[in-house]
Image 1: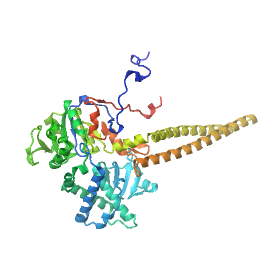
Image 2: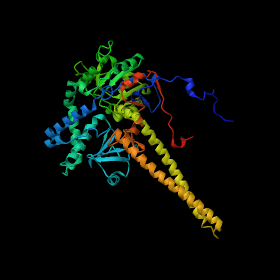
Image 3: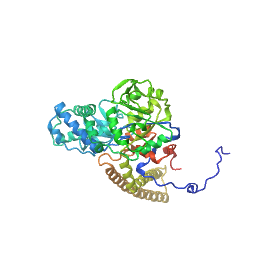
Length: 504
């Protein structure tokens, strides 16, 4: 007898047992990699930049590049000519890697194998790409490579590619090594962040650079009303944090006098990812952002600087999986918090709204690609069957003593039919593959003319797509997408299927 449990049978049409819900805007959905029950979440923490505060990417890129070029010329002795480099702001996407030794920029799959690769704006030939990268998987921890894993890091790769193209595209040698150029660009961008010259421009015209999400205040209020504590943990210093958060939240809801009233704990200059790996103390700050002294407790209404995750959990009484941390940095926010604290994680991927919109607009073509891939698999099976059949029929002619005339004619007729069917299948396979390659290339160009879809590289997940799947419990395009869900929502991940479990 079967040991399977007995259940009351469900109606054949499962639509009979539930009413369909209202359609949800696909660009505002929350996607689930690992089951997450918000009813078990007692505390929700938030990063600020690119999480609570969505930036206008083109304006930010243009400002960062302008500041960087100025510092390269004034502080590093670069020629004024670099201002003339034509930059394609659509060229760089998150999830690329820079080879500082060759100046190449490439995209990897989740196995760290290099796929598409560019030098300046020119594609690197397949043979050269294989020569450089076909060995062991790329180790991004090597000093040779730089990982473009945040939206803040897009400008440095944009500038690198544009300067290389400006010189080498005109047939002139680059005046610096690729490593020096990249390191100088990164150091100049970092300096613009450190000396507050970049942030001074932003805070002088916040609306030009930061998008105020009208649903954010209600989202935070909804979580608080459900009894959850909220905390802010940002790497930005107090003065910048205060300016940005005032613009985002002050005056939005009548029962919150200040943005600070939305949060039970406010932590600035957090130095993530070191916040999760080191033991810096918390410093209490006064109203002007000056240090008062080391904090022995974390109180509502006060602001703290620095600190570390162990003291945060001890002083605030936080317990591992009862905390959900929401951030945009796959490494600094998501990977480190999960590995060092056991917090649950929600990744904000700002560019997903465009990705999802394009996916909806081209779902017919994407379904056609899926159908073509399935057809290629079936045709491969049929071709292999007919090749095997032809070999088997050929062996009959080698039987000791030979075949009789009638037997030979039967075998020859069978071979002719198998060969004809093989030719038909091969021709159909060639045409199917040609259509598949054409459609995949066209779809990739829609998403990005250089790199294709953010989360895919060829038939595999891209490296950043793999990281999102491995470390983000849920991911979505903006914090306010939680507003459409219950504070006790059970986010259930789709059933994961291994290749041998498909097709039954």
